Amino acid sequence: MLILTRRPGERVVIGGEVFVTILDVSGQTVRVGIAAPEGIPVYREEIWLAVTEENRAAAEAAGDALGSAPALASIADAAQAGSPPAPGSPTPSPHTPAT
Amino acid sequence: MTESSPSELPTTPQSPPAGGEGASTSPTVVESSRFGVLRVEPDAVIEFPHGLIGLDSRHYTVLDVNPGSGFRWLHSLDDGLLALPIIDPREFFRPFSLELSEEDRELIGAEDPAAAQLYVTVRAAPDPSDIVVNLRAPIAIWQGRGHQVLNAAPGAELQAHLFAFGQ
Image (cartoon, rainbow over all chains, first blue to last red; front, side, top):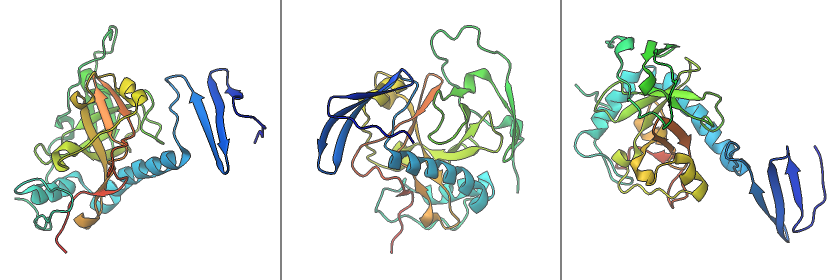
């Protein structure tokens, strides 16, 4: 890992197109500004890791847990009988497959 | 178990991006591990310039396997093993709030992001009360292009329970 010492206002250039500017240092917190081309999305690491995990889990869980598309759809059919559920509101049990 | 012929699974046609001259007119054929052979017409191909976060595929289509169920599948055209169940959060969560950064708004390309197709991934589970959806990172599709964006709205959880049950 390359380790650099920078002061507020100074920059690091990555690949000639990503500019990281140290904006402010206060105690344990460092504020950085990042200018990157449109083709390079920038995320906080914890968000990137969490969404990556959710995406992979969604792709894997569908096959492992339900086995087939109709199974998932039948759950939706049963649960959606009546009005679509809202967070926090009770809905009919979806354990009975839709006919 | 009965299933319709995989090649007849309905897909969602997309409006092509402006200036799409020279685009292929032949269908993309994908050997799907879940749905068999898929033939996807060019107007149903969705390009994800940055892919989904953490996944490599750049081309997907939306399969409406059970029309009316609310569940669809975002199926990779680059990897026959990769398909994610999705829902339109606006059908299941009322109200559904979307707060995007200026960068994400520009990425989507629609003047009004609400005009884009909007989906969230579904993490399935044997017990329906354990099924969660990712409201934090919705997928917006506009004119044949898709982007997974970050929703800063309060309550937009990474794992929001899809069905609420009485205790």
